[in-house]
Structure formats: structure tokens, C-alpha cells
Length: 265
Image (cartoon, rainbow, N blue to C red; front, side, top):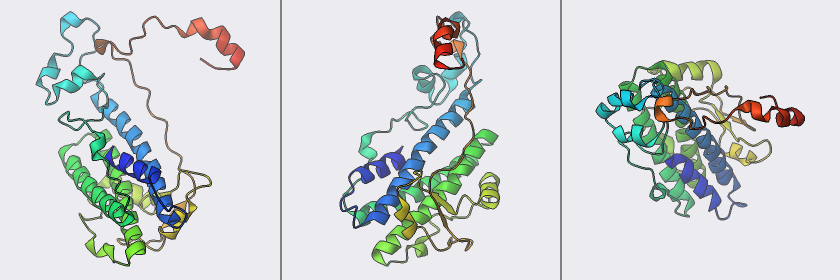
């Protein structure tokens, strides 16, 4: 949430974007990607929480009894075993976490530090879990977050002339210890490709995102647009949570309207 909203508000508030277009384009491109990360993580959390309570619509059987032993019991009370903008202890994300100073050097330095800290946290979370769904999600974020570390370091170098890469690794950029991340690097080269997520805009991000990767020396590549993902899973109903709370809905009641509109139910 912090990476998404920091970069989003920095792009909204960006002054002098015509003269400083490469930095604006870079910030916008990464902000767009962070939005997709929120969606991907939400599905991962839903999948991890599916089956953690008894699927029984009878509340008298106490289908959520095991939730009383959960570290964050409130999560089961306030959501349908789903994602919320809170941390692992239930503390909510707030707009106070947005950093948008109006000073480009300061914003880029903050973003670099933010990505380094997020990367450290992901490494620790990876070491806490063994579930393949969790590790796959974390592995992907390690690769893309590492790319963002390099991107903001390069932006600072272009703007100030300071060789920020001497501060890297902060922490170590290498993903060799994480099989899920290493696979994405070796097979798809996802640590090298910065996407604009727009077919026409943000092309000047390539003025910053060029040269070679500081770890393996492979050439960096700006990709105009996004990349093809995979279909997200269809989440099953959880009757013990009164989910989804639409028992009276029957798609058949709209079949005639759907047919006229060419919609397949």
C-alpha cells in the first residue's frame, strides 16, 4: 500500500514534469505496477485463508472456533477470510504513510529506501513460511521489488551524479537463495524488464532505465505496455462467514436479458 500510494501521489503532485519527464514517467510506470501487486497479494491472501475454518453454515456448530487462537482474531471477525489494508497484527494502513515532499531528490531517495526496506521484509516473510502459494507470491515480489530498487538508484544517479549503486546491496539484491524468484529471473528475465503499463505514454522512463543490471551485467529493457498475466482463481463461497450474502440471486432470472445483450451467463 505504501509503495502504491507514495508513487501515485508523487505522480499526481509532480511539478515541472515537462522538463523532468523521464523521472515522472519512471514514477508513473512503477506506480501502475504496484497497483497490480496489491491485487495479486489480495488473491494470495484469500487462497492462503481458504479452508482455515470449517465450511459449515450452521453458526451453532462454532465453525470459526479455531479463530479464537489466531494471533489476529480480528481479521476473522472483520473480513471473509480475505485481504484488508492492515499489517499482520491488524494495524491499519493510513494516508499518513504517504511521502510526497515536492522535492524530486528527496522523493527518489525516499522511494529507494522504501523499496530496500520492503525487500528486507519480504526476505524475512519468506523465511517464515513454507506454503508454495506464499513463497511463489513472495518470490515474484522479490524480483520486481529488486528491479524497483535498481530503478530508483539509477534515477538518483541521473539526477545527482552520485553513484548510488555503491550503496547496493541494501540489503543484498541477489535472489539466488530464493528458488521461486531465481526461476523468474532465469526463465523470464523479469529483473531486467521495466514495463510502462501504457501503450503510448511514459516512454521517457527508458532514459533512466538503460544500461546493464548491477548484479549480473545483463542489458536492461524498457517494455512499452504491460505483460500477459494469468487468470486469477475463482474464490469459493464461505457459508460459515455468510459469504457472499446473496442467497436470493439466481442467474437464470436474467437469462433473457443476457441473451439479448450477447452475454454468456
